[in-house]
Image 1 (cartoon, rainbow, N blue to C red):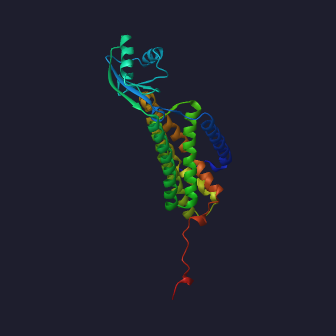
Image 2: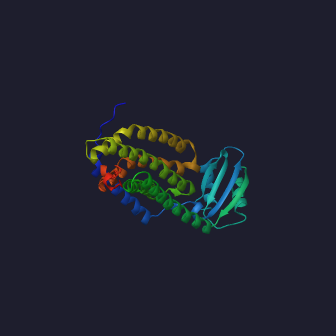
Image 3: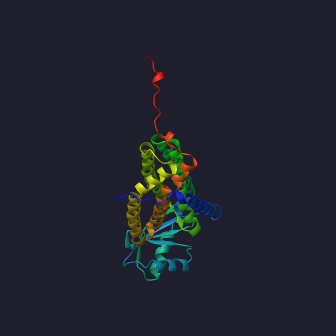
Length: 302
């Protein structure tokens, strides 16, 4: 297969400015608007009911709002007759019965399956542990890449991962989408996906620095990106197709998970080409950083 010759590094300054702008917008939104945390983090009630016939989620939501239950999240859970209702309100032993009574009075014929409550303290612990998990993942990745490649590659990889995570979280903040445990799981998955792409490109850059005799750092990095571009695009497109299907057909329960991963795949593909490579250029990566130092025979004992 013929290697492409796209001048990616020729547009590195434009890409760098674009990344900085998007990062600033994302960080600004996170700092000012914050995230719309789901019940997993804020605490609240969860009620599961079963309908005799397939449920009309919008009608159920309207009935609950009219009955005085504020901002209910209503979604299918497994089947089209099984419905999960989330409410941000204090614990009440009779909440499940009240909801069932409201729906049955409207002629919907439902049965209560379970009624649970997540306390705010548990939600705070989950949020703190999730943040620590993200930081730990980045530190482990940095150590792994430093050991496998070189410290400059490690900084490039972590820069790309941090870039991807901030943008994914920033999109959820900007659009006001619910951020729950499924979205946090997707963000962690984005770290793994983006790392895989970055490792492939980095491995080719290291190989070409050792084997290509002519060319400066820019041309070698450009060559490496072009050589891995086909693999990167095929992997990203096939993953994106699956995520689009999940987003459209998977229902509301995994919509946030699918959306976060889809954004992460797109941003991760971009960052493996531009962010990691740009960081290497800024740190003046060269052939000397990657070629093992030869042993000086004069230093050996006769």
